[in-house]
Structures are given as C-alpha cells and as structure tokens.
Length: 445
Ligand SMILES: *Cc1c(COP(=O)(O)O)cnc(C)c1O
Image (cartoon, rainbow, N blue to C red; front, side):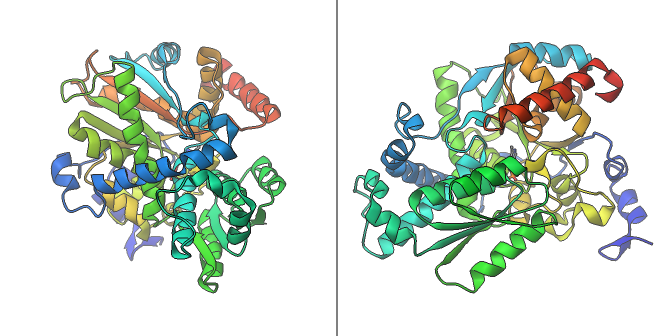
C-alpha cells in the first residue's frame, strides 16, 4: 500500500477530503481554513515592512546601472516595472465561457512584459544578484551606497566579478533572469536546468555566455546539484529558490510599485472595496513575495489566491496537509508533468508555505487544456501573448465569486500575468494555434 509519512493515502483523504479530486487532477478550488486576520498573521514574521523598503531602496541605488546596461529601461529611469492594464475584453470572455458573472473591475498586471527577462523572475532573481554584487563590492571597499552605480558597467568591475561564480537550479525563467543579469555584471554563471526547461531559454542563455547544465530529471534535482557545487567553493554563490529571503524580498517590492500604479489609475482599495489578486505559483517565492508585500501594505483589503497546474499542486497539497516541503506531489501519485514550465514544481518552498499559511485566501488548480485555451483567448481578446504558466491566474475570479457571496461591483480583480513576452514568435504562433483548437472544441477546453 502506498503511504505518505507512514500513513496510507486513504487515511490522508479521509482527514482532508479535498485531496480526493486533487490527486485525480480535477481542477479544484480550495479555500484556506488556516487564514487569519492579516494583522495577526504578520506579527512575529521574520520579514517586515522595513525589509521591503530596504529592498526597494537597493533597487533605486542600482537604477542608474540598470538604465545604462539596459537602454530599454532608460525611460523608466532604470526601474524594472510592468504595466497595469484593464482587461474588460477577457473578463467578458470569461463570463461567457464559465456562465459566471464576475462583479467588479478587472485588471491584468503584465509581468510578462517586465524588461530584461520577460517574467516575474525579473523581480526576485535580478534583485538577489544585485544584492550579492553590492555586498561583494562593499566587502572589498569598492563601492559606497552614495556612489553612482552606473560605474558598474565599467570593465574594472566586470573583471572583479569574473572571479566569482553564481549558480542556480531552474525550470527556465529563474535561470533566464539570474543568467542574463549575472553575465551582464561579468560573473561566471552556471544554470542547472530541469527537463521541463524550454530549448529557447537554454539557447538564449548560451548566447549570452551563460554555462547551462541540462538535467534529465525535475526541478528539485537541478536545484540540489547547484547547491552541492556551490558548497565546495567559497567564491561560488548559490541562489536558493526554495529558501532565499533575498529572492522573496525582491518580489515583495512589487507591492510598493503596485500601490503607486493603483493610485495613478484611481483604483481604490479598502476593506469595503477589496482587491483580489490571482498569482501563478511554482515553488512559491514569486507569488508568495508579491502576496506578502501586498498584505503588509494593504492588510485585509487585499485577498490573494495562488494558481497551480492540476499535475503540480505542490503548494496546495503542502499547505492543506501542513506538511509543506515535507511532501511532494509524487508522494500522492501525481506526475508533475505540465506545459506550464514555470510552475512544474513537485515540492513547494517550506519557508514560503509557512509564511503564507495564515495569509492566503485560497489556492486553485488549472488543467493544461484550460491553459492553452486561455492563451488563445488572451490573444484574441486583449492582443497579449502569455506563456502557459501565466494564464492560470485567469481561472481564479469565477471560482472566487462562486465561493464568496460578498463580492460586489466595488471589488477589483487583478490577474498577475507572469511571463510570455520573450517567447520566440514561432513558438508563440504554434501555442496560439493549439489554443485555438481547444477554443473551437469545448470538450477539450
Ligand atoms: C517562476 C514562475 C512563476 C512562479 O514563481 P515561483 O517563485 O516558482 O512560485 C509563475 N509564472 C512564471 C511564468 C514563472 O516563470
């Protein structure tokens, strides 16, 4: 008999009946029974508002460097940020498809179009490498916080960084972000890619001088390998997607930026006019960091939901059973096979799972068929191409409206669209065509 932590699966299902449909890959909405008032949930957390502000200040110090190294960020003053866009057309499509009216305003946060690496990983990944670079230079008395950081584009600094190695394990997008920024600064960088990683991501990294190591197995193994290599070399630094607080803090800064964008667009957020945020979740750092930052800033006026593939619901199973990173989706017989490469993670971050357990409103799962269909729907309705991981947010509002009778026209829904602008045109077209086929045949959607 298959057991998990010494107990038969049947016993887990009788304690947590929702596990039944989830381990049979049925799309599912889980309302988190462990959520408490945000004030209470935020007390005693290891990270606080000051830490988020410190991360934001660091990104500001680096802005002159980013602006010079990446001319596409010059207009934004070297701040890596994405647009907040209204999504009325896709909202109307969602209502037609699900037959469920969605009261409230509907917006899309286009992290798919973040400069430099075209995914949410441009927040956490780039932040952590910048922080590491700053720390190294400060340790060698080569940089003061008052300096103009644009000097880091000079050859002397590139030469300094070339003595150091940065390592990371990734399903694709984290490797892309870490690889691109590290290579730009002059670091030697090694990216361990899992089997899910797309060929074009590996090709792009190699073009930029990044060493890519391919693994036949999944993400956890790629991470393990990176971690092991770094342990034996004091000049190596491992970016730990499962446990890094720096990575997490890089994501939290999104909350400060979003607050400003909401104000600019006169979108009110208050306990009477809540903001519902739908975040695709892999290991948890990206959505966890954004959600945590939002809870710190808006408290209970913001409601956060994670989206996961039906074949990789690691955060859902970990949080529901409270086993967190002690359990993987494989333990419950799931295969972790999904087209959503950014979310193809079998074991969630224990650190993020525990931080979010009292803060998150819910988690839902999305099938690959639904993802492809919604890739086509987004192109047709809004003219935006997203990758499979990034459309999973879209399925959230219908679930949430069904489960929460208090939602009114005063509420706002925000879909966090986490990646897609850098997908090569040929692949975009093929993915779109596949989605169109699902769209035409509802049985497949
Ligand atoms: C990585 C990724 C996510 C999720 O971030 P995690 O930190 O792994 O939870 C979501 N969408 C895309 C496109 C990603 O690449």
